[in-house]
Image (cartoon, rainbow, N blue to C red; front, top):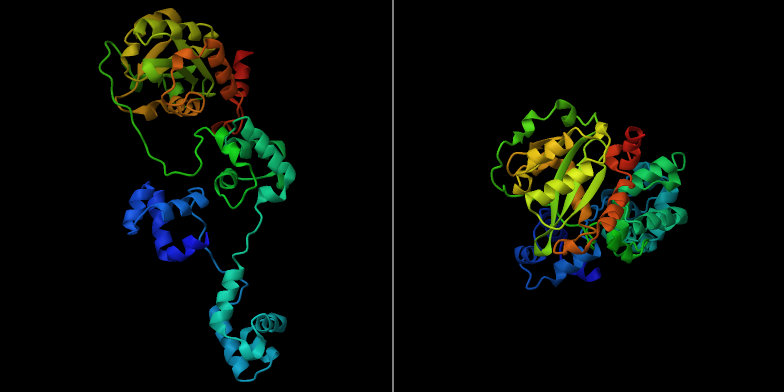
Amino acid sequence: MLTSQILFTAKQKAELWERWKNGQSVLAISRALERRNKSGVQRIVAVHGGIAPVPRRRAVAALRLEEREEISRGVAAGRSVRRIARGLRRSPSTISREIRRNGGSRAYRANRADRRAWDRALRPKPCRLALHGELRWRVAQKLALQWSPAQISGWLKQQFPADRDMRISHEAIYRSLFVQTRGALKKELTEQLRTKRQMRHAKAGRAKNGQGHIRDMVSIRERPAEAEDRAVPGHWEGDLLTGANDTHIATLVERHSRFTMLGKLPRKDTTTVVATLAGHIGKLPEELRRSLTWDQGKEMSGHKRFTVATNVQVYFCDPRSPWQRGSNENTNGLLRQYFPTGTDLSRFSQTYLNAIALRLNQRPRKTLGFETPADRLRPVLH
């Protein structure tokens, strides 16, 4: 850490972090800062876990440089501590300690005293998880169950509403995992995060390509208003999760509760996809069979057969508009924790898929006020 402070000025570090937040690579940042190699930038980013440190600020009650200059002039003029304190509207004990800790009246210099005070303020302070053992244990326990930091933070608020020692923000959990100097949580717990990443990266959006035209498809613009506002359960969003060797899993998410169902697909042809979806939807009570929203993938070209089998109308999104199935897109992202890109999905049984769906359905969700999807859907099922 000391090396990085010597090699980079405050202005350069500010530019480094601004470029990092904008999604630039370590190599690109190194070139912009005219560094011969990327190790210096990499070291700074890694130490802070990809999280830009909070800019340092002088405490409101701390002596300012101009006050120290006034103390220096007063000492040189032979004024008493009390007289200097009155002029600065400070306590005499504050002035006395300031002079004593910086060499006494004969050696006191304002610039040197201010620099030493700034350096002393760098002493590390323990984070919240380091101070509260039970809170640290609870957070580690939930991380081991693959809960996200946001889910843990919301759950703690509900479980311990009157105990402020059992509160922590999701950002503080991420910092404890990513920032090396904190060390309150074991680094291995980052493996339980959905992305398994070791540091914070800038967000980048990705959109799917359209997949062609489907005959007699009904536009999402004709979907009932009750589906749009999520007030009524039974409206679903669906998609295929793709793996290596052209393998796929069907994913279904209920818009009202975010309840998830997964279907094993031996093939991607429309006959197989429609039969798998109809088998899952057909097991639901009638109140949960209202509509299905899908993208324009050719696997749903047999949507009419699906509607006949389930009495559920299929509505199709606009091309390259994944946000129109936002709940399903989000869930597919969560599923990548269990089915990383490049995994051969054909080796997973339907029993295993059901177990993963159950795990998601029993997790508290921030968008549900930290209820679980299973809890939100239970009144309908009963």
